[in-house]
Image (cartoon, rainbow, N blue to C red; front, side):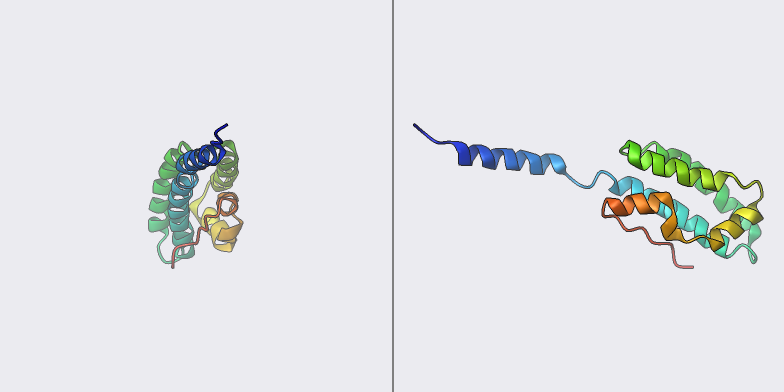
Length: 126
C-alpha cells in the first residue's frame, strides 16, 4: 500500500494559497478611501474655498457611483450604501461640509468595514 496523503495535502494547500490571492476588498477600499478622504479634506477647507468644495463633491459623487460597482461582496455594498446615503441627504454644500467637518472619518461605515478586512483607511492630510 502506497501512502500519498502528504503529497495530496501539499497539493491542496498550494491550490488554496494560489486561489486566495490578494485581499479582494483592497482595490475597492483603496478607491473609496481616496475619494472620500478628498471630500473630508475639502470640507475642512470649505470656509476658505466653497467653490472648490462644490467641485470636489461633484467629482467625488461621480467616482463613488463607479466605485460601488467594484464592491466585492454584499457586506461592503451595504456599508457603501449606508455611507453614501449619509452624503446625499444634504441639499446644500455648506451643510454637507459642516457635517463632514464634525464627523469622525473613522466612523464611516466603509472605513469600518474595510478595517474588518485588515485594510486601514486614513483621511488625507489637510
